[in-house]
Length: 429
Image (cartoon, rainbow, N blue to C red):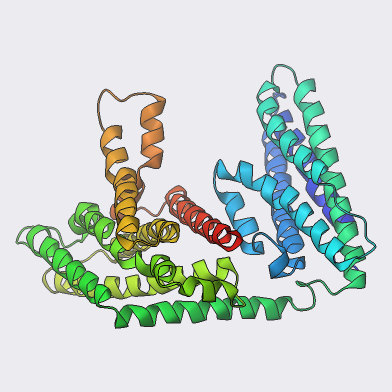
């Protein structure tokens, strides 16, 4: 069964990446109008190789049954976009997959060739070394060229061996992602959707949700009345979103999410949930979307504010849309952080306090320290990059910038990932 077209992947990924890198670096060595063409072709080949590689990773993880893999195909690909963290994650999605595949093949007692975990590790190591050596290209081009060739050779061998072994195993037993992939995907989505509906229903039956809703409405209404809806002010929600909304959400969302897993740990129902036919990823994703749905209900209550502004002035619709996109991404990050701390303890108060502390540090402390005049150089740059408020302020100004969107999505994905890993630790314990 030809589940993986190995020669397509072998040529597209290692060869495409190597040739693309060489063309891109060569464009800096020649003084010619063709230098830009070489740079463009190099970037194009590198982008193509990267996209094919991500598709390759998704497909090899999709092959394994859910109970035999340490992460899902979506997480395997998605977390590769998280800066710095993807260095570690590359080891997980290659060497980790090789180990999971070998264990699966041994459990089936299938006569297939195993994938070398050591080759996957060396491939990741040489990828890091090759990136570091690329800075020497203008001075000693031979050194990064050798490093790139070694990495490409290891990558080609890993891709070839993975495709060959998958095809061999696929000819013996149906791959989970090939024949039943659509069914598994629907089942996974159905499980997460069921959990999300369960959590949303629990919110409307819990007094804490109504307390949180009341606090949110009172705080947002007070901030709107005193800071926005005044004679002479601009017809915009920028004063509300610039400071007050962040302050409100830092306190409200941890209270909203503190019970998501902590309550399961306290009552012991987590044991029933862990023995159900759902994965840790489905549990976390379901609870996350349940909390986000209730958060959308909270945001829906303040839609009356732009209507009131439109009655007395001209509202900038584009600015308003950017404001709400920013608030939605901000809320997703806060919910993910609070959900992680909820998986760490059965005491809801402890989860709230730790969530408060980290969110305050990420939002206000990092922002305040970055604005101090004595803070200069790389410490200020690091604090600015870590400051949630600084990334959020462009949305308040009406600027929808890709790097800010990536920041919020990356931090959200990271905390959801560590929440899944925390649940996996509890299963093994």
